[in-house]
Amino acid sequence: MNIPKNQLEFEKMFTTEEQCIDYLKELRFPQGYVCRQCQYNEYWFNIRGLMICKKCKDELSITAGTIFHKSKLPLVTIFRALWWVVAQKNGVSAVGLQRVLGIGSYRTAWTWLHKFRRLMVFPNRDKLKGKVEVDETFVGGVKSGKRGRGAEGKSLVVIAVEIMEKGTGRVRMSIIPDASRKSLEKFITNNIETESIIITDGWKGYANISKKGYTQKIENKFKMLDKEDILPNVHRSASLLKRWLLGTHQNYVGEQYLSYYLDEFTFRYNRRKSKSRGLLFQRLIEQAVIHIPVEYKLIKSM
Image (cartoon, rainbow, N blue to C red; front, side):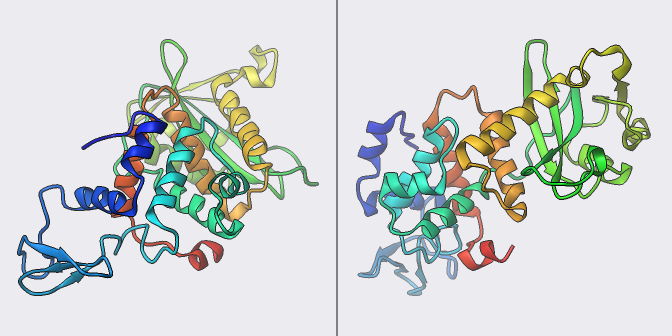
């Protein structure tokens, strides 16, 4: 399957609605069309763009059951929006996307960015492994309230970072309700392979992690000159996250949507060394084809 290598190739591949439909058709039927009702393998398109089985006359929209279902935007515009998202190193805001593509309303641009974020967590993704730093941070605007692990009015985010021989590997991030042992252990077991070395501070919430099949290494904060020296890789990732939220999205991230912004940041961070924007585009389109439809009212009601 062809993958666009740059902007010019992308424009050639997806100039018309028909080209976009053909691309989706190839993804949905990699072995060729098969009728979902009678398994016949021949069809024709009617004037409404529906695939009609030549045998049983079953009608199928190429976008039915996908993230594109019932969209009022042309596929050409949606494809360009997704390309623009993956082509920009730090992503784009809804205002920026609306301006660049001339999308009619802010709401439409905002909705599609949220749809795209739902495509950025791949099913059955590999867990982190090896040496992994784990710590929590608070994300949110400046609000009154106590500090520390019991801070009020902010979202508590736990971060895990793979430590490589040179630099860092992948990250995982998740909102947790509190810094209790139950919450932290659930995050660790869901995101990190057993037998990995978990590097933490001395917080009691990590006290029994060795009983879950991990080797725990506790950094002694009394030997460090600065608090951020204890787990520098986690704190660096947390700083990058907060600068990204502030710079790209001006910190206008509602608490109910924060987990999806964490997914986008994780997607971008873990693919920061990728040289092929086209491959990232294709992976997200593949996800879009198998993802259930998501309507604005569902996103807004969260």
